[in-house]
Length: 267
Ligand SMILES: Cc1cc2nc3c(=O)[nH]c(=O)nc-3n(C[C@H](O)[C@H](O)C(O)COP(=O)(O)OP(=O)(O)OC[C@H]3O[C@@H](n4cnc5c(N)ncnc54)[C@H](O)[C@@H]3O)c2cc1C
Image 1 (cartoon, rainbow, N blue to C red):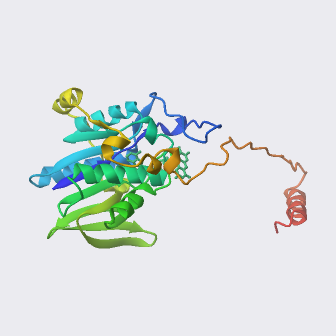
Image 2 (cartoon, rainbow, N blue to C red; image 1 turned 180 degrees about the horizontal axis):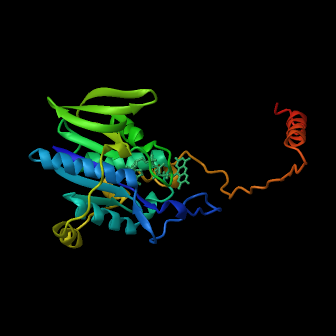
């Protein structure tokens, strides 16, 4: 079985900076981490590998060159291989362009197209873009089933039985493979890197693929392949007027407050 984990390097949550000119995110090397839910996806892949034979775990990321650091961490945590999609042609990709590139990388890693022994795990959403679109879009591009908001999976008769969190409880879904599963944090508690994992991560060669190497048209990725346009990025300015009612009795203060709310047509 091949398990592919889509893994995004994101800034620490309080550290998202936007380029107000282009409306894209400024991605620098500082304080970047593996998207937390992708750590859950990776931990699940490693758990499956520990209980089943012949499982290979490959982490795939698209991002700037320093995203290699996140992939090395994935190797240290137990992934077997890692691939980075990185090139100027990918920059500015929205969720559609990102999904097309990742889907192409998945198909290529699987030798042409995903087969019935292939599972794709990813986080339900990333902490920076937070759209939650990439998993379902990758499945759409690949034309394979997707199960979202998953907190548990069991491998049964060549299928995956997934327990997903829905508004009013839990839902159990059975899907054939190949499939894309997006995971939530209840899935597991991610582990820690081992010493042998760290040593392997240091030595391992991480291939870096360009649009040409993926055989994907430059018109499908980057700003050119992105139908989303960020019209304006700005920091909202919050201003508040404070009115203090400091009457002698609580009753008078309440009367004044009620009059104010009536005047504003709030009550
Ligand atoms: C503040 C902000 C707002 C944005 N708004 C939009 C918008 O409105 N529309 C739009 O199209 N784009 C938007 N983007 C761009 C968006 O971040 C990227 O297109 C993108 O790579 C994925 O979107 P996401 O972060 O929303 O991923 P999500 O869909 O939230 O991520 C879900 C999962 O998909 C996988 N994944 C996502 N991206 C990658 C990757 N690069 N490599 C590997 N795995 C990945 C991970 O497993 C992740 O957990 C925005 C970015 C930022 C920072």
